[in-house]
Image 1 (cartoon, rainbow over the protein chains, first blue to last red):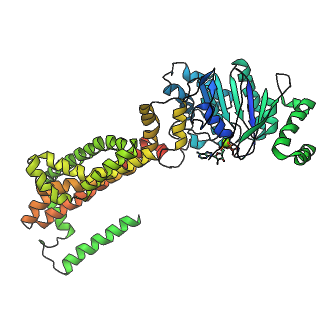
Image 2 (image 1 turned 120 degrees about the vertical axis):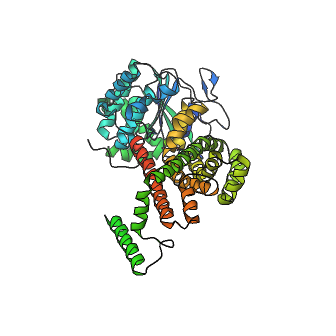
Length: 242
Length: 248
Ligand SMILES: Nc1ncnc2c1ncn2[C@@H]1O[C@H](COP(=O)(O)OP(=O)(O)OP(=O)(O)O)[C@@H](O)[C@H]1O
Ligand SMILES: [Mg+2]
C-alpha cells in the first residue's frame, strides 16, 4: 500500500517547518522517513546532501504518543537518550531538571509516567528529545494532549528554545493557527494518497506572539490552509465563525 | 480470616474423624500424632528440610541461568524459536519421574541428578514467559531505542528486559513452585536426605506420621518460597505490579 505519493520538500538549515493535514494523510509516515526509521519505497530523503540510511544521532524525535519507559521516573526518561548515546555526564541531571523546569514539571522528576497526566507525559517526551541538543528536531503533534492555554505557552517556549539554540524543526500539527504562528513555512498535505499540495510562506515578523493572530497576513495564511484542507466554502464558513 | 477458619474446621474434622472411626495410625494418623512425631524428631526434620531447600534453590538458580539466554535466543528470530521450541516441548513431554532413575545412572548418585530433575521440571514456564515478554515489548519503545541507534545489546538490556519483568516474575512464581516438586521427585529416586527421602524412608517402615510431617513441610516450603518471589517483585519492581500508588 502507498501511504505517500510524490512528496517533495526541501528544508533549509535552522528552518521551522510546520506540516498540517487531515488525519491519515501521512504526516507521521513522512516524519518516520526523515527520522530514518522507515525507508522510502521509491525516491530518497537526504540530509546535508547524503541519503538517510537509518536513524541519526543529531536528530531528536518527539513521537505522536509520549512513548515513555514505564519503569523509569520522569528524570530518567529524559536522560534515556544520553544513556543510549553514552553521553551521560555529571552535569546531565542538572540539564534534565532545567528542561523539566521549562515545561513546568519541576516537581515531578521523581514521578513515574503512570502518575502523570497525558499532557505531562507529552511534555516529558519533549524534554527527552531536547536533552541531546539535536540539530534536527522532528515533532509529531507534540502539543496534541495539552489544553489550549498550556499549548500556547509551550509553543512560545519552543520558539524561545529554537531562537536560543538554532535547529531545524519539522513540526506536525492539527492546529492551523499553531502551524502558522510557529513556522517559517507551512506544508499542507491532503489524504489518500498523502501528498503535499502547497508550501505556504509565513511572512509574519519574529519574535512571534499570539497577538499576531489578528494580523491580515496571519488570516491570509490560515485561510489558504483551510481552503486546501476543507474546500473553499467550508473554509470561509470556518473563518467567519472564528 | 475465612481461609484460616476453613483450615481450622478441616483440622478439627480430621482429628475428630480419626478418633471416632478409630483409624489405625499407620493408615491415617491424627494431626496431634503428626505434631508430636514432628516434635520428637525436630532436629532430623530440620536437616531434611535444609537439604531439600538446597536442591530447590540450586535447581531454581540453574533454571534462571539457563532460561534467560534461552529466552533471548528464542526471541532473537523466528528461525531460532522454531528450532528451540520443539526441543523444549520434548523435555517437557518426557515424564520426569521416569527420567530420574536414568539420570542417576548417567550422572551418578549425588546432588547433580537431583538438580537436573529440578531444573527440568522448573525451567519451562520461565523460558516461555520470558520469551513472550521479550517478544511483546511495545513496538513504540523499540522504535524509540532505534531512533537513538541503540545497539542490539542496549535494546535488550535497556528496553526488552525491563519491559519483560512482569512476564519474568510470572515465570519465576511458577518455576519456584515446580522446583519444589522437582526436588521431591529427585529425592524419591536417589537421596539419603531431604524431605522426599524422608517420605520414602518413613512409608517403607509404615511410619506414616513422619511421612505426613514431611508432606506438610513440603507444602509450607512451596508457599513460603512463592511468597518470597511475590515480595521481591513488590519491593524491587513495584512499577511492574499495578499497586496502590505510593501514598506520600
Ligand atoms: N505501519 C503501517 N503499516 C501500514 N500502513 C500504515 C502504517 N502506519 C500508517 N499507515 C497508513 O499510512 C497512512 C498515513 O498514516 P500516518 O500515521 O502517517 O497519518 P498521519 O497523517 O500521521 O495521521 P494522524 O494525524 O491521525 O496522526 C494511513 O492511511 C495509515 O493507515
Ligand atoms: Mg500521525
